Image 1: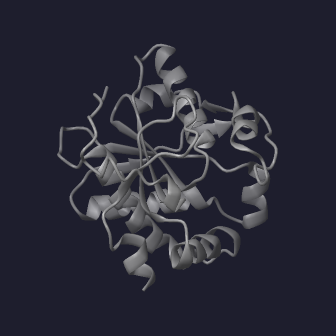
Image 2: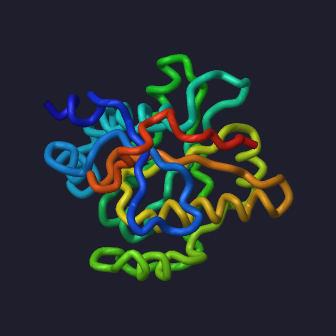
Length: 220
């Protein structure tokens, strides 16, 4: 039952409303409801680490839907959105990174070269996002992320896909994309990225633009 809801259907393009400026093309494996919500919360908040594998399988599907899995000589670089240090300390693990590792392993198992590039970091503290409006989340996260030293050069070696467990307003992914673009502009050429998440609000699914039908952007 859980597996069917997590990865039994085709991943879809998602767009939050309002859509924050700079949000890359995002695909999600499932809607954030029912069993999917329960599994994500069990993994993230209760440390049920065995859920990382099925969540990684779902994320791998969303990555494939957005990035395309036709080999072009470059690996997929899954860049997880970093959790706040205090959240990692409280939970005892970094959920997005753990799921990203499982997704990369799943992609490699299916013959797709993929690796995790954990190059993003929080450069300043941010407030708890719970209860904030979309505009407040954007303001809270503005300039909060950057790429570690040498990370921009690493990102030029493959096709970048931002990954996270959940999309709500899109503010976090938009800020992560800004940080990656800024690192590329610093000397390695702009880095165009896609994004993939395990789940998103059912209202964010773009019924007019099913997976694979939107215009593809060029990859640097």
